[in-house]
Length: 196
Image: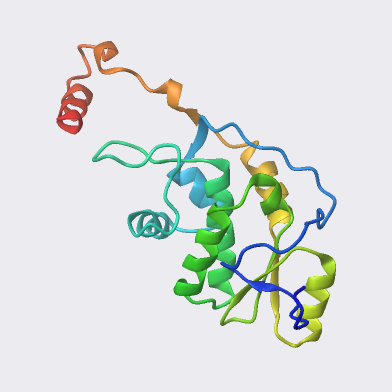
């Protein structure tokens, strides 16, 4: 809370003071080398593949493990990417503008794992606010501004449970070009075209 009595900072502003864990949940960092294909990310985030593709091409939420490099390659999204996709979807559902969502996503990318778990995003439909304590959430709601909230730690747990039942892929799972079987001529041509 700042000296003027403002309950929270608008997303994009630097965090103020020490943060306590909002819901008392202990969240763990996910394996950075393991990811999820686009279809899995879509299913978990509740979006269409068309939305996923558009958001990746426009830089809203790009896959951090492996981007698409041409025909036949698959994007690979990290756990954190899927978390951000789910948050974007929820913000869109409440009518928040894409411009405000882009600002929120940029801000979320700059946060550490522990910071993400402690944030509740509140929106009045026009702006997105970051609350880092229960008092800030209450102050924002009592001020008549906040009408929708997303507890990032809760979304984290929800996605963690859902993704534990989904197939994963690792960067180590890729087959090098020299191991492509002779009978798979189409795959060999595709890899050669993408490499050159």
